[in-house]
Amino acid sequence: MGDEADDFFYEEEVKWCKIYDQDDFFTVLVQIFLAFLALGSLWIKRLQEVPRRLFWTWFMDVFKQGLGACYAHVLNMVIAAVLAVNMRGDVELKDQCAWYGISYLIDTTLGLF
Image 1: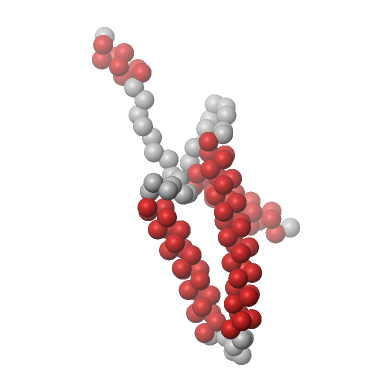
Image 2: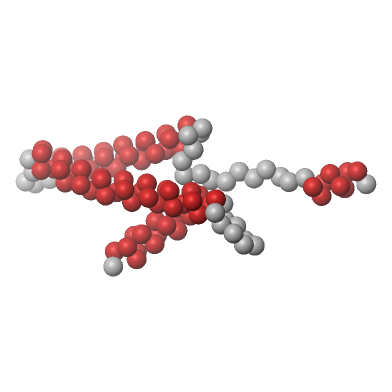
């Protein structure tokens, strides 16, 4: 009977996907990699422009786009983290990555109207 009681109260530790975790360097590495990928693609696009804009004009355009993208990205990360922790009810979705995906889809579809 002792084994059954232990099995009844035993909760398996479940790990959830996190958008950003300061204790996990992998999430930081993914964020840095994605930032370099985005900036690198914009630089390659600049090299293929005909006629090529002045560097300052290109830089200000990229800065404007980057600032807006960073704002939306950080806001979606915060929304995902808050929703994952504060869900109530019978069904809980503690996966921050899923909440980020939902928030991103809503932002890119309904946010355009």
